[in-house]
Amino acid sequence: MCSPEVRKEANRYFWIIKGHLIPQEEPDYIIESYYDNYFKRLWNNESGCMELYEAGFEAAYEAREAEMLSEEMQSVANLGYD
Image (cartoon, rainbow, N blue to C red; front, side, top):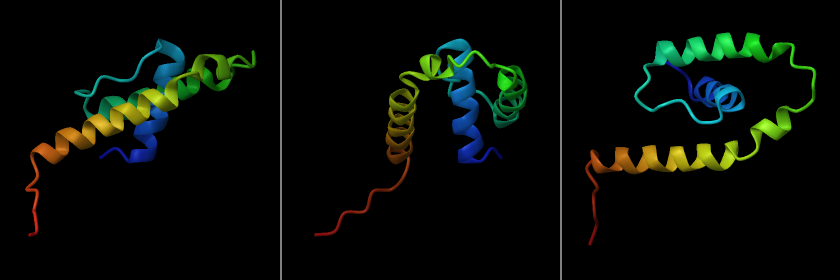
C-alpha cells in the first residue's frame, strides 16, 4: 500500500512534469512507479525552475485531499448525538 507521503510526493513530481495531479483511480503500484521514475527524471534538473512548475500544487493537492475525505465520509456511518 502506498503511504500518504509517497502519494503526495508522486503527485508533486507528476505535477511538475505533467501539470496536473495523478488521476484518483490509479492503483498504488502505478503511483509508486511514478514516484520512482519521475524522481529519476527530475534528479538532474539543475535549471532552478522547479519552483515555477510547482506553483499551484499545494492548493490543488489540498483540494484533492478534501474531495477524497468528502467521498470517504459518504460511505462511513455518521453518528449523531442528541
